[in-house]
Image (cartoon, rainbow, N blue to C red):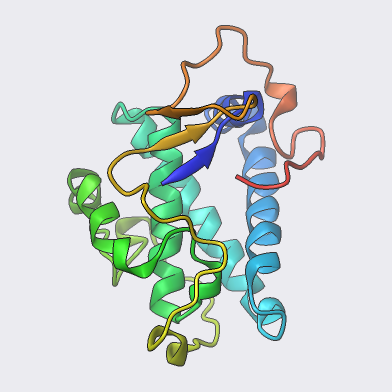
Length: 198
């Protein structure tokens, strides 16, 4: 999968790992991701998906932190959460929101099979053990889109590794090294600032 990575991603990681600001960071990141993906959604369905997406993204914050604890890099941990979201989008037939084509679902799953198996995550069950008690709000599906899926926001051909586009536009396999001095105040939500997309 192809992701972006800049100082704000590392600041957000640090904020999520810091108890004092974690709640603010989670709230900001959830708002950001819901905003980004409802913009990618069919406008006729965007509003009805918001509550579902809010809960989905909040749950993936826990899988992100667990992946970091297990030794995955920032880019890999973030990619895991994006893959989980794309499994969910696929299951609902929300193909216009997907970041990679549906025919790459298995390839992305296989790359993180150890993590996914440990936590009960499958394509059919994107949150696995990270699903909150009581589940998350449902939203209407558009299964007819799976018959001939369109992926206007998907980038194929990046299923073999995590590809990171840095601030300078260079593509790095595996991601960048974390900077030594990470400023938590630059994290999403901490100063109520947004980044355009992931």
